Image (cartoon, rainbow, N blue to C red; front, side, top):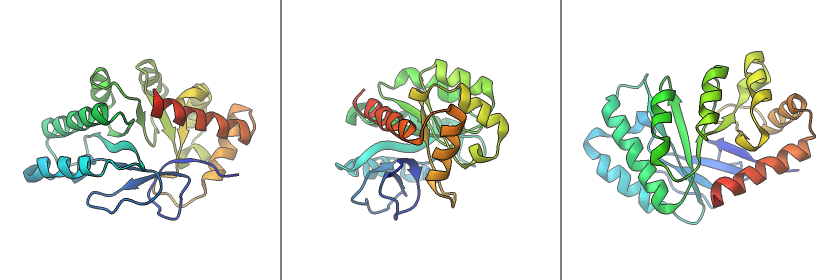
Length: 208
């Protein structure tokens, strides 16, 4: 059985969403494209956004990763402006948004009302209260490798509705099957049921 990898950086994985680097060449399988906060070129924002829009081909599944990050040297106002522009592009092309967020979750939540598309926090690894607030505001949560060993994150995942979650390897070196196995144990369902639910979630975020 193939298990869908919601967000990854490896060109040898076809059953998932490949994170296309800025100025990268789109693959012939599903990918996402966005301007990561750390990749914002302050002088050439318009060019970056134009390039991004030009890459919205058939295999482009989502916009992202994009978002807000308190740890990068780009001014927060500029980050917010670029994030908003990408939300507007996602609204225009009707694609879900994969969000990168570091210590800016409540700022990201404030942008939710600007989006008519699904918004997914990738690599979620924070506290229960943040998860609850994100879920209350209609975000999806994508979990990664930390679920394999982080007990508090396992508890958060246990409390996350099945129809609001995704699983990913990101840029970590492990097999997505390990994560599906762990999550199926936590959720007390079969790996097949979990896989079916995630595929259904994909259909929901793509088709509204």
